[in-house]
Length: 334
Length: 134
Image (cartoon, rainbow over all chains, first blue to last red; front, top):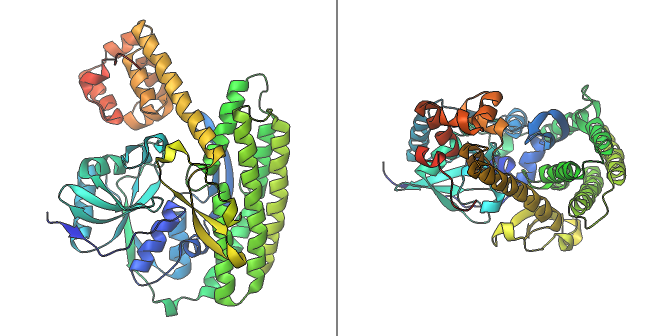
């Protein structure tokens, strides 16, 4: 095995999957910003899944499931991604080496807990973290992790462990890269953007399952109201978990709203449709409401504010109202 | 969120790192802004870590008193719970819960212990022992 390093410039992004997609496509000759990748990939959503448990507490998601952005981008930009998974961790590492030897930048899926370059207090068992590998030096791999401010390195053993982690959303040694990328001129941006807006608004407003989209927010609001006030420890853990799923895991609920608003702004300018930017402003307001909710809920966990699940529930209901308006507007523009 | 509202409350968990956020800057233009940490995030992060630390401490004293297996301590100190550990090591939930008891754990075959050791990325010999301090 020889050393290799693919000429590549690290950039910090707000979210791992959209960051990786943006960097992979840019490297392959289709320059695309992270918000644009997130937007065209229709990454935004809301889901409250009480039956999917993390440490005994429900899942709250603010974006589509892992790999959803890759799929959305592939469909709307006519990019073809190739994904390879491996049952055997060593085979997964060998394949990674082959791609690096061929000078190919690849994205890999990992478990955050086994990434030593993460600050220890931020290492939890989350299996769907994406990062880029851009080279190898001896037994070390050169890593560009989109959520880190600087590029970093990881030992072969650690990377293997992180890629072969098991459990919910197990990475299965996944690696992926774009196989066919259209030139910027070939992309029908108008169609791509509007298809994504239609899809995103539809998902938020009309998903038949009441746990997804605006109705999911209302469902979560009702769940918060019904928390057992006798068991304060549980209530605090529940709220803390809720905020953690909102702000820590991935980019955060508000963070995704802001990123999508940034996409709307970029799309508005690219397509000459200022109404999209206006829609983005309203979505920014929804993001601000999410942050307000997160701050209040967190303070209640620590008794910096009196614990009031009723007030929190009402905040969530208000967010649902705002988002309903935003996505109705978006739907009308799509 | 405006650029000047991006929280900069240096969080100890970040170890001086920065996180990137999209915020509205001059002229209403969105841009990526580094954040040094946010109160809300720090509170809930601390809470989650404290909860694992508390469970690990309790498992440590239970194991010392002979009321639990060392596995429970190692599981929590690796920030796992029985459901996750079962998933990762390839056991059923009830099996893991049984192995959290000292007797059942002591009787485990070396092969099954090795599965736990691999899941927790620990040496099998360490799996049986407890550190002095949790």
